Length: 293
Length: 138
Image 1 (cartoon, rainbow over the protein chains, first blue to last red):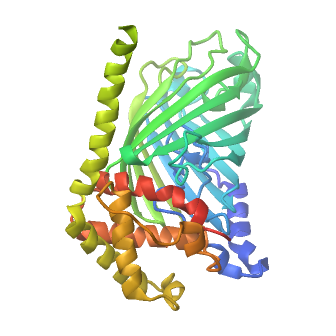
Image 2 (cartoon, each protein chain N blue to C red; image 1 turned 45 degrees about the vertical axis):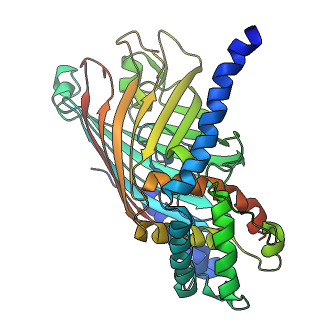
């Protein structure tokens, strides 16, 4: 396993940041309500598991800073995916995130002639800006909280990506996300439209022999709040099918997230990642731990 | 006739909405339940290091009485809150979102203590949440 150097650098920056700020650690006000920063989605942004949300990560209010680190493991029948990352939320307005992803082909690597346990890595740099609305307070309005953002992804396997018909090993997704808490119903709903060229989230690069333009993809999730600490829900995320070598379908999951406190949360899901390259029905557990302020 | 056909389901909806409003007051245990929740939440505020100084200048007995009437009205009960509006009541306090949320957390603790189900708590909190616009001034 390679060390996620940029993640460590960002973590160091995050720790040093208050030293330069006048108010020091007070900037980490932890003032948001439990769970209202979301958890860390698979690309490192504040959200659910697969889906991105409009909420800004962490527990900093509009007067403060929040931040967190995460580790996610998705052990699938024929592959395994893991992700580690760090994210900061500034003034409940701007979110900056970094995630390192590793996709292990295990035995399939042998079948594909790549070698057993051949791995793909991605560095994912994200930014999200809240534009309008407040998902929690605006209970007197239908207006959701709306954010726009991007995720810039760099994959380290350009040669393999080219061999399977992928056009690029680097790509940038752009999205607009809307989140609304229907508090009287204890229901959080999120809808995101994403402009993307990514094949399998970028693990197989960007653009392909079959289709090489951006396409608009949908991701949505609904979470029912069982208690202040516990939420259950479902997510769906569509993906483009750019490669001739294999049709790519949507991914979905059923999740449960438990918030021990504002410093620690655990998300467990049953995820269906669809067919990945030559293996169909990649369904398995999704486990994610987030620690932060 | 057409209008009648259209308005019938609407009337049912209005009736249901009105019922839901009455139901919340009852679901919170009526005035007795609300009184318990207010007393427990005010106790929590005064013991909460994050926000207790906000109440330094307050007449706590009057505050409890006003909260009881206001919560009753908000829950759809037979009360008429005649105190200051929320902007006036919090003028000069320079409250932050963190302060507002601390009050929410203390109120949630009080509602937990009163045995109010989480879903019922959220129906009530949904009516309080927009007050953030008037209460938070910093």
